[in-house]
Every structure is written in structure tokens, then in C-alpha cells.
Image 1 (tube, rainbow, N blue to C red):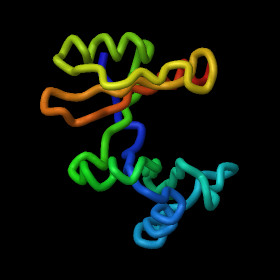
Image 2: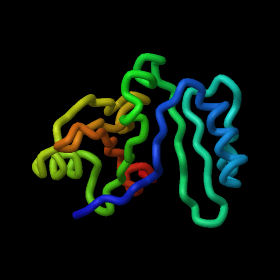
Image 3: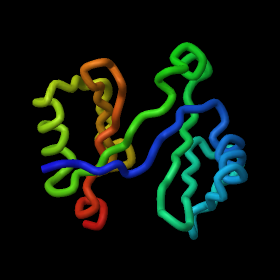
Length: 133
């Protein structure tokens, strides 16, 4: 079992403004049916050619300024199996749990934030099969 990178996440102070800036730089677009709006705390943009995604998430000002080297992290999705099985696998490889956000948006939703052996964070999301079900 392995994972793949769902999207690259960028912690920031203003998700909407920063996503709009990067759209101009990269030629990325909003997702069809899910436009980004001023005041949104999470803004996802998409490369229309490759499908690569960037997710901008607002964090407290202190987190954005005190940890400039930790403003980008991977969100991973299990290629097979479930989110929870993948969390167990990655923990067994030496990761540590930082925060558990399972159920944040209701039963069966959410993610878990882990840290690699050097403290770099990653979030483990539900598999595509779990999201479809």
C-alpha cells in the first residue's frame, strides 16, 4: 500500500487573495462549481492542463510568521485501503501524530495531521473510495 499527493497545501494569512495571485502567475483556475470567494478560509485552484491542485488555508498570523519553513505540507490520499489504515502504516514507518481532525465535518469526514521524522507535517485524507461512499 502507498499514497499519492492529492494537492499541495500552502498555509497563509488570506487564502482568497493569495489564491487569486497564484492563479495569475500560474494560469490556474477555480474548480468548476466551487468558486473561491473573499472571506473563504480555504481556496483550491487547479491547473486546467495537468490537474495539479494548490490549496491555500488560512492560519493564525503567528503560525504563518513563526514557522516560515513549515508553510507548505503534503496532503496524501491512500492509493488503496482506508485513511485509517494508511495512518497506521505511516505511523509504523516513524511518523508522529500532530492532530486528529477525523469527523470534523460529520461522521466519516476529516483527516489526521502527522509529522515525518524531521517534523515536517503531512495530512492523511480519506481515500477516493471513502469519499465516493
